[in-house]
Image (cartoon, rainbow over all chains, first blue to last red; front, side, top):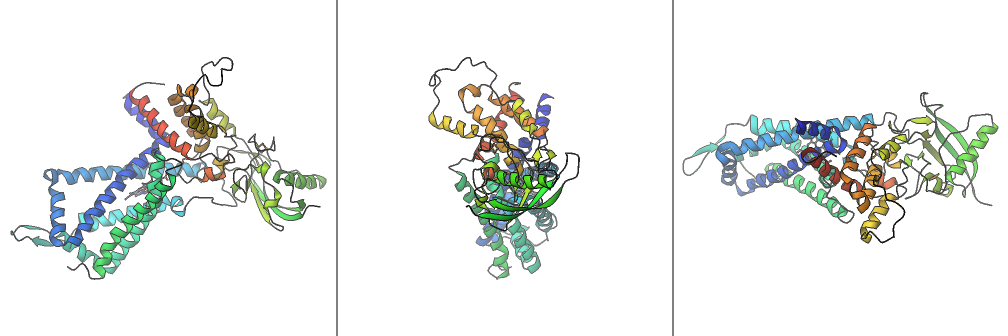
Amino acid sequence: MKLLESFKQFYASSIGKKLLVALSGAVLLLFLLGHLLGNLVIYLGRGALNDYAEFLHHALHGMGVWIARVGLLGAVGIHIMATIHLAAQNRAARHSRYAYESTQTASKASRTMIISGTIILCFIIFHLLHFTILPNDLKDVTTAGHVRPDVYGMVVKGFQNVLVSLFYIVSMAFVCFHLSHGVSSVFQTLGFRSEKSADMIKWLGHGYAAFIFLGNISIPIAVLLGFLKF
Amino acid sequence: MAKKLQLTLKVWRQPSGKAEGRIETYDAKDIPVTASFLEMLDIVNEGIIADGGEPIAFDHDCREGICGMCSLTINGCPHGPGKGVTTCQVHMRSFQDGDTIWIEPFRADAFPVLKDLMVDRTAFDHIIQAGGFISARTGSAVDANATPIPKPVADAAFDAAACIGCGACVAACKNASAMLFVAAKVEHLGMLPQGKAEKDRRVLSMVRAMDDHGFGNCTNQYECEAVCPKEISATYITKMNRDFAAASVKEAVVTEF
Ligand code: HEM
Ligand code: FES
């Protein structure tokens, strides 16, 4: 297979792996935006959020959610595999370290991507167990008498536990940190950054990270403050 | 009479590539503020030689910022303090009386230490040999404007061509990546009509040569751009990423180069 050989060579190169990290990162970034906008439906009430959840589970005759799951799993898998390979090579590229270390411009976030990434991975696992794999069996009965899972109730009950809410908020802080470097990095790696657009891209990245952070943490905070009631 | 500085130097000493290295402490006494950094080392070396010691080995040649031979990581910063300067252009007026200055080689596995502060930067030559040229015979010099090149393109190509191949980008990079050097070399040829013909082959082979020498990978932190004595922009790396992606796809599905 000629194409497979080409792909192997592409993956073996530094820029090839970086492009894969950026592409998978971009997929995850777009997912985060969609996921957040979906989450915010909670402010429209129990009916709206449960309608939305039902819609997601029935899209494309129930296939939609599985296509998204497989795609996201693939993106996360590629992202982690390539970043681990890159990080290992980076470590191997300088065995003798500087006795006097100094940093000119690199942000803290950019130097700790592997740490924030690992924390995000732990969060993703907890989050999936919490709301997807082991949800509680609360039910919501519509006025038409239709019985369906009560996603709204599950989220509010979940966040009424202060420790759980705190864990979500801290995890979102790490996501925000990861994105504060990651978003602008995508433009650089994929080749869409110029002298003129550099500042704009940097602020877009910070803005995006802040939006994802504030939007998501607003939900546990609203539950804890009692704005969203069971 | 110029002001004199009394300094303490922490210098990396390593008798040979194979030997273990370590930091040694030296007093640098009565250094005129008008001296260049390399002249300061010359003065210290004269003292070491007078005491029967082995002078500190360091690279240098033109001492006017054009050859790219001088190196040194000074207080953790390749080519020391100041923007857009090589070590030979750093002057002692950048330091205060009583300062302690740490002087180390450019550190990267791809740049093995030869002795003390001298490193072997042959890896860069190998990257150039892999594609940093135009293989068509160009004959004798043509009329300056025979090939029209838009001014912004000519300027951008020239900015990249200003690279002196010193290796500061590698030394500064947290991952010892050579992306800024390779990007400057790939793009200064790739942007011009004479170099365009071999653009795809060039970017693929130069990036592969870079990888073969064990440089690290870019993490978009722009430490390279910050220390580059010729202030070459990391947006050349952006361009190279794009060119590499396009050339990889072409190679995979259209043609061999
Ligand atoms: C919601 C999940 C995630 C999102 C949205 C995300 C997003 C991103 C983005 C956009 C980048 C920049 C890509 C580039 O260099 O152009 C990036 C880089 C990185 N990510 Fe993630 N990431 C996620 C999860 C993870 C996880 C689970 C890890 C675990 C190891 C991780 C590790 C890294 C590392 C180490 C880098 C730096 C790569 C480099 O600078 O070369 N990320 N991420
Ligand atoms: S000695 Fe030539 S650039 Fe410094």
